[in-house]
Amino acid sequence: MTTRWLGRAWRSLARCRSTNDEAAAWARAGAPHGAVVVADAQEGGRGRFGRVWHSPPGENLYFSTVVRPPLSPREAPPLTLATAVAVAEAIAEELGASGVVELKWPNDVLQGGRKVAGILAEMTSRTAPADRVDFVILGIGVNLNTLEFPEELADRATSLARGTGRAIDRDVFAASLCARLEIWHDRLVAEGPPPVVARWKSFARLFGRTVTVDNGRARVSGVAEDLDRDGALLLRREDGVVVRVVAGEVS
Image (tube, rainbow, N blue to C red; front, top):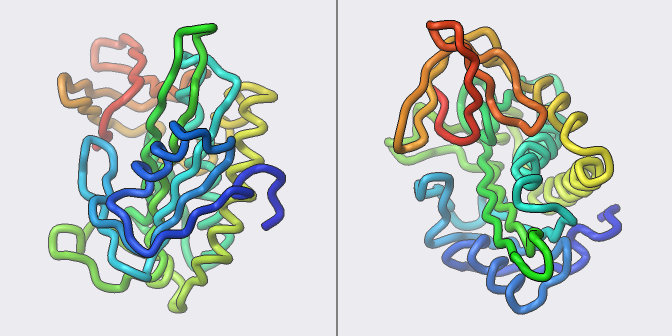
């Protein structure tokens, strides 16, 4: 570990329902900024929109960290982009020349068009004495060594072991991820969203393509033109109007 604050408090569990749940409970009990929970297996691992995250024992990285950024809730959404950038960089280093890493807005990481990692950010804020973030749980699942996926995931998921043809050391990968998470968290706090958004865009392949975003309540389609300063997706509809999309599933 080369970090200053991220991962200096660390809990490793053989099994849990969800590392995000464990980290949130620890945060409510006073866990410090940068505390990390990892597990060998999750019984109720989840992704965005309550989807199940495939979490077989001993194969992959199931990781959650507590961050307490000096931000208001309105300033917090780019934390998800910063986390995605850190994960993409760690995966790109592991893959080397054997694969291309792509970010799918807002926080899926793809390798060869298939999902290799996902991020679930869950925020708790306070209104007194100021409108500030109390803590954010950044949950990260990375498919490191799974070679066989359930039938419903077989054509949509992959792993680093599949991409490299070798087993991935979970501890080494976790240390690399922590280093990048710390760098991008600190840059976001010090410099604001622009450098995070610029780096995220360097991994993206969706701009100029027609996409549909579904947030569970409404759907909007258009050409993906850019990211706004805060990471919102800018879509140009058929009528020429550019709309901001702050959350949803892209297809």
